[in-house]
Amino acid sequence: MDDASALLITVTGRDRPGLTSRLAAALAELQARVLDMEQVVIRDRLTLGILVSPGVDEQATRQALRATAAELGVEVDFTSMAARRPRATTQRHYVTLLGQPLRTSAIAAVTGRIAECGANIDRIVRLSRYPITSFELLVSGGDPRRLRSELAAEAAAQRVDVAVQPASLSRRAKRLVCLDVDSTLVQGEVIEALALRAGCAGDVAAITAAAMDGELDFEQSLRRRVALLEGLPVEAVHEVRDEVTLTPGARTLVRTLRRLGFVVAAVSGGFTVVTDWLRDELGLDYTAGNVLEVADGRLTGRVRGAVVDRAMKALLLERFAGAAGVPLSQTVAVGDGANDLDMLARAGLGIAFNAKPVVRRAADTAVSVPYLDAVLSVLGITREEMDDDDAEDASAHARR
Image (cartoon, one colour):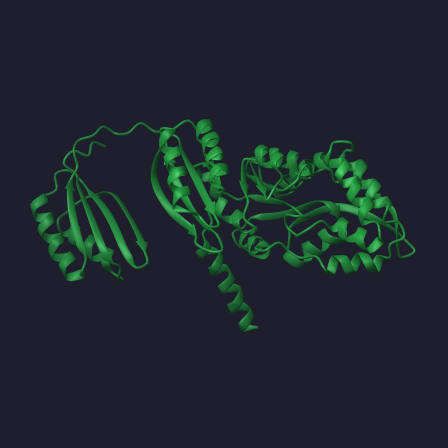
């Protein structure tokens, strides 16, 4: 539509109930047609923009709205819009910016890169201000590959996290989120805790190092490490399980996702003794891990069945998505290690969480703050939605 002679009305001041309604009523009396409208409130301070149709009686409109604004105790400004041609449809993206802290210099650097890529910031929404600060920018134009590449480089330079995703309906559609366990959903590595109980921590660490150096694949390293646990009483395994510590934000992440209708899964290169506990403790929909073989109340030093390695994690993601009726394009995978690479690549969105450099480079985006619920910001979920979720839980608990 050609907006020749359209009038932009900008209202600023202290917000109050009924303010927008009063202004709209004044415009209705003038038979003005609203072409566009946007409002933001920051700390009770309102900024409201209303674009009304060409041909409106500007003098009468200015007079009526000045009188209404005076009654409401706000200020109003007017701008006559010059004629313009409709903008061609351009590709749009959500750029999520996270930091702890999120310095103004980092914001300046990232938004500067967006401009250098030929893109424009159409809207900014704050997602959270604690325990991390995060903003979602709706960006139009620019080459998507260049945007991702340059913002990733700037994020690394500024030590913040930046995620770039297409702005489409699919972002809010039903999704499956699949989480790695050790050093992602829970803190630390369970096999290391078991090795301490078995008195073989040094030997297990040496095998882990050999695997990281490429001398062993994951299955070989797992079987060798488990072999060192032979004879460990099952009670010791249960003690280690009971000492498992969830990553900060894990409960909020899972609870919020489930309230929003997401399917939540966990896959582990560790053991079912932990994944089964997580399933019951957090209400996960699907879990998978390696099964420690037990005989006469002690570990035999072997695992039963197929090993959950790098390839198996990707396959399990596909199986869970199929069972839940979620297309792979609508899946999210979160992990930290090389064993997660295939899963991250197979998912619609792969998120590296406090990950090793090779994983950060391969993932679609990375989160480097120590709170797992920061993943919710990447998905466009606000802190207020998380807090409302927590408040509802507290209220329900109080009623019991």
